[in-house]
Amino acid sequence: MGISTFLTSPWPWYIAGPLIGLTVPVLLLVGNKSFGVSANLRHVCAMIPNKHPFFNYDWRKTGGWNLIFALGILLGGILGGVLLKNPEPLQLAASTQADLQELGIAHDGSLAPQSLFSLESLFSFKGFLVLLGGGFLVGFGARYAGGCTSGHAISGLANLQLPSLVAVIGFFAGGLAMTHLLFPLIFR
Amino acid sequence: MASQVNAPDCMENPTLGFQNRSLTLLRYFAYLASGIVFGFVAIRSEVISWYRIQEMFRFQSFHMYGVIGSAVLVAALSVWLIKKFKLSSLSGETISFETKAPTYIRYIVGGSLFGLGWALTGACPGPILALIGAGLPAFILVFLGAVLGTYFYGLIRNKLPH
Image 1 (cartoon, each protein chain N blue to C red):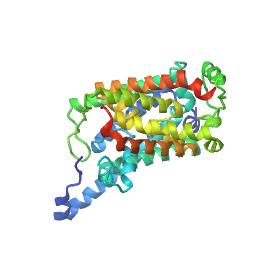
Image 2 (spheres, rainbow over the protein chains, first blue to last red):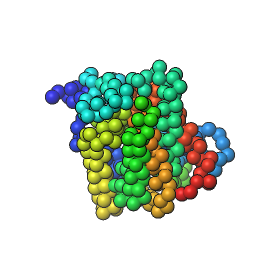
Image 3 (cartoon, rainbow over the protein chains, first blue to last red):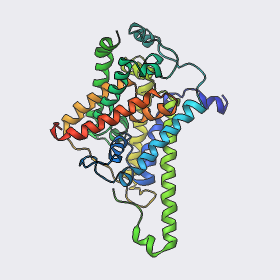
Image 4 (cartoon, chains in turn yellow, orange):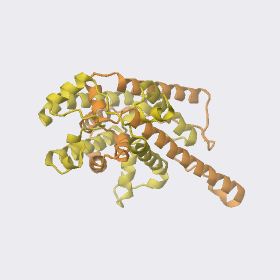
């Protein structure tokens, strides 16, 4: 396999996982920083001038490094999803395709179903609610739990924090409930 | 989180100030670079895909479990080594680890609410940014929702059990 094929083909878990895991020691060794993306959402709130104690802090000093890291993620998305876009359709387990078909969500080979994440769905009432409401739950839940998949599932578990394990079990409980109990109500 | 730049040195010794400034610049470049690598790997491994998240929550593929599992393993091993050899960061400070407060209601309730949103949008905070970059503008609305949710938490956090 040539280098250009490697850079545009999907990567197996045993290459991607360790690379993602290395983010933790890199950030610690560079500047004693703890890997966690959702804190940036709080920093964005702190940018809006307000007197609320939870958002009234020097976001440049506390979160400058993390906002730069977040900008990097956006650029990495452009690199992987636009400049070095995978030309092949996304491979998905046949059983998942069948389950989603029952909910009326077709597997269209893209990263996220067009029926939910296209610009048109943005302007439909249901699509708007799914995107904004889903995002709201992500932001509210992450701050309530004190971290997200990076802060708890990776940084926290790597540091053997029991609270992080409880949070990760919560992430899964919520995800399973949404997938198996609420999806049939929302999409059928 | 004290600033790593030693202010008095900067003022007294211009050479040292220059060194500090280039070190700061180097650090920020490293943060940007590791963000780029993270975003790129997240796209390449498709862990930011709504479909792949569905595979995970339906237990129909090992992929996501392999990615998260091996990421935690590598991160845990690194943390163990950093602690064992008492390593310092690039700027010379001792690396510290935060201990999460053992108050469990917040992790159970907050974590579950986060999980609901994760499965619905197929994205957590990092992936939202990678997906916007990958040319899916619908995730800008997911991002705005996440900022609103964070703000709402800040408004009512004193009334919530933790």
